[in-house]
Image (cartoon, rainbow, N blue to C red; front, side, top):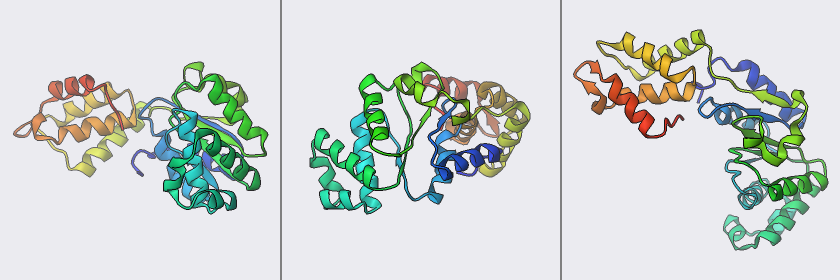
Length: 244
């Protein structure tokens, strides 16, 4: 986990301040930049934060909130659910009512991760949460624009509420890649050429750097002590360029 937080102290401190002050915020940056890992490194310090790992739909969000409230021993949630399996048996309407009542009775913060084009109904539900009390709702998205934050964009119009996580600059990306190579004990007769290609292909994205270096360890991309760079990169792209 600490690897992708490399050189992120300023961003980490900012997220820490948002949570400490119970302020709603928007974390945004490209896939693989380390938004989730960075956020999760801070969350253990804040027990009352309800973290929704998958916020693709409002139903998923309310079920995640119910599980979080139950783990925090919310009186309302504990009364409604004997255990987490009981949450699945509740209808969406019933679940929503229980969660909203539980939020009103306590002091919590909500963080919605992996946001995907929230709809008008999704935004309405979030505003209903906000209208029931003082529960701040924060989100994690790929950008601060409409394609990711959708109808929630107006909630984070103040720049002071936003924290952008960017790809590494050239120097930091090289330090990060060298550290990863050392950690994985990767070697090869063309290791310098491979490093140059990783930096070029990744554009400084830490998740992509990790993925490419980890792939290079696999025997499929080795010819004795030589790293087969082109096949490795082609396969990476063919798989959608998936970064951690």
